Image (cartoon, rainbow, N blue to C red; front, side, top):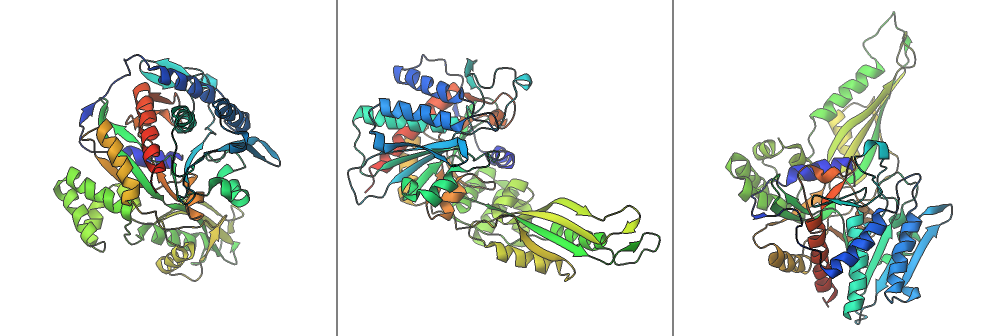
Length: 473
């Protein structure tokens, strides 16, 4: 999960507090104690680049599944050539109805690096203190990885017989440091292992206020797509003592000014429409009225200007592009012969990269500036629909566990491994049921932590929601 994405999440959950929650003071249930041991083993397996070992973590989780009675053919630890420490795990609990398409549980087991000298506690030792679990990956994303493994084990122990297959994929490489990405590799080389009607992934959870009151719970549908563009201009150059009006750096600077001033048109999908519908009621006032106006007419410039004062809301409404790097010139005493900038775009789901490029060309309106896609050209697909088949189980379980807490649809403006599944035609939804603190719980930073109660509640929530999904025809 990117830092940008975490910043977006922190700013989205500004809604009314309804239920208090504090540290988990109650004794752990026996099943929670067993889960804690699994979670501890996973957190304490270092999977940070470059010294960690995702394959070791995958093998340890595989051992737990086979010890629980899963057939060896249904549990697979995979590695790719030349990537011995970047492996992952797939597993399946077989369904009874061959006509029912599988569901997939996806979680990444790699984590962001953590240096012991910077942390108040050993980042690779699970420590329970003052109602929190501390350690790197306690939230991102070993909480969901541990819950998914634990749920498969519990389903087998319970004798649960799903209609559809429940597939599991624990993968390495989501955080970007590892040179190998397990989800992309599985899709390209072992598609059948992850083929599914839909997948559950990280991306949305519950939010708490600064007093521990539950605010809302999110479900994510869709992600914006990352795409870099290179802007470049050239000139004959010359001696700096004889300046001329036309200058490669000046031309590029003017182009970047036009990019800064350009606003892509408002777009909506199920997730953002649901989000702003909910937020319009909660926010109220002029901003709430502007949200309603924008829902009725996405071309309403006045309403757009009001809502887009918030950078996170602005990003949810449209494709965004921003200059992130610049270079130019070749000598201090020479007119620049070349100037180049990187413009990073986050494309609204379903928007093609070439369409964004064409809009940049029109906005810059200068043939002396070349604009080309840089790096990998990422596929973009529309956000998956928030159908009743998807929302129904979430509403049923959340309504029982947290009555009155609003369910808020959202769309990620950053990226997760769900982008590979979405591009492969597998509808992917972010859902955890784990409530986080407003400061972000140290994800990607120091002293990462999760409330004990939040983890145990999320475990129960996901266990029941997956059961309902698995019984759908």
